[in-house]
Image (cartoon, rainbow, N blue to C red; front, side):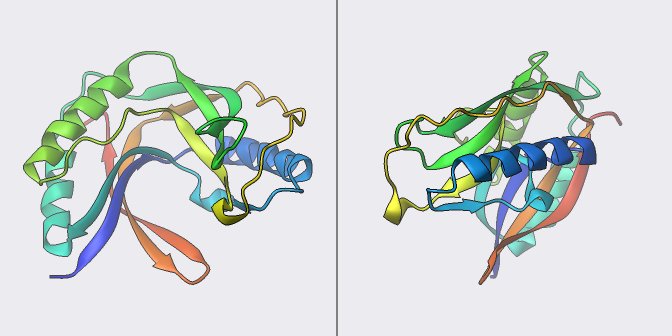
Length: 187
């Protein structure tokens, strides 16, 4: 049976996408000496869980079960925090915009997701770190990051009233994301 590469994500509103796009433009100028593949702002998202390759026949049952979750909250609220690097600032693979949550609602969400995904044979992913990837360093040409002055990430609030089951399709120009299900926190 055919499979699709899936993940669960929070998709930011246009105002946050614009703010991150502006921060990304500043970073491009500061980090122009590095081989970085910059993420298309239309694809900005906060990954909750990477699910991997799921049989297509299981996608709709998975979406239906996720849609039945009852939450004790109506939204997730995050504040912009910093420009950061994974795994570290010295030899980074990723440059990202970091966020801090105002409550612990994402922990409840992740716990619900993880218990449901176990029923579909998907084991829990690593710890959720609220961030949106802005760019990926070319690992084959990776070099030590000098200490450029990083632009501050302007203070902003990101509010999410839903999360999405997303499909990632690998294409020649990069991956393409398609929303399969949108699951609202308030039902």
